[in-house]
Image 1: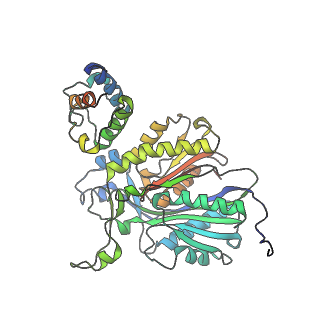
Image 2: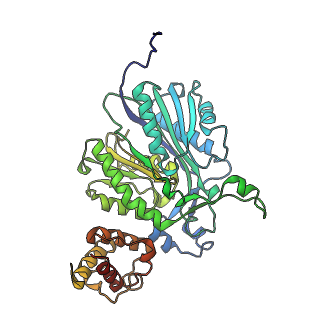
Image 3: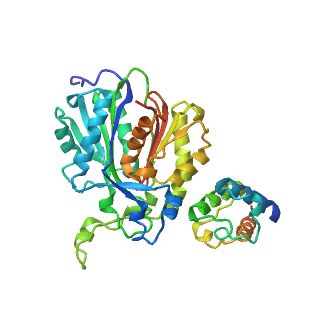
Length: 335
Length: 81
């Protein structure tokens, strides 16, 4: 027998230690959108809860927004970039196949050669990243993991598509996952259901879009709204309940509910299906921000903290769900 | 098996809970969209709640044929609710 391999020494607990967001400067109210999609402010508000959304300008790149959000999260956590052992970036709108956004972000932030990679888990990406980060911290793979959800969905949105043009938006949110005395990130309940891959997807692959006979075009996001609504509202309520049980708590123990800000109607239907007590504060960042996919949960947490609706130590249920279809939920303590 | 009026009454409770429409307004001749002001997302919610309540399956293709409360009650009756 050869010599035994040494592994990381101990299993420890993990927590989200800091949160930060970046919202693009330009707010786009419904009034700017309604004409292109033959709609109305009232229709958009009723259908989605959205009054306004943020769209990034040319300087607000995926990397630039991520660096801004990450800087705030690091400051909130009280750590410096050289303490970050791994950078995980969830995005579907960093339009380079390679290199990753994560490697560039890790470099610009000034980490000490942190491991860095991107993941593709659409609107579930932040919760996927938190699950990965928590496992890395627990097992000693990294001391601190920077998890970033970032999107420029406006680049992939057909501005004349009535089912998506009012919905998708841009922004970045970041979390620092680090060691903790107490368990502060519950078990993730996650999965995928690829039979529904057509419900939310790019219309075609890049090669088809670039070499289309009529000239190159963007392979826009397309969505079957009602089918997504049904799946998200009811199937995801069950997943959320499983995450609550897995953490050994009850709905009455929760202080805040932070679902992916997909659509206010989904949030409301999910809360109703879960029979959440009225005492649980529900994140409604979508009203002013739109649907920012992987960025929406950290942005919503940041807003809850800024407005005093959530406080450090609160128990929060997070659930992300989206194209794939993929989903992930966990109960965490708010940093 | 539930009577037509029992199904209507239970459906009315569902519509009331989801859309806030007074249960008494949910009569067989009422259109979900035109009279009760449900949009397509509200309709999805009503359908899912009805499926659970009556133990029936209402496929997406069928939902667009359910214009009135009477259509829905008749479908649920046929489906064995």
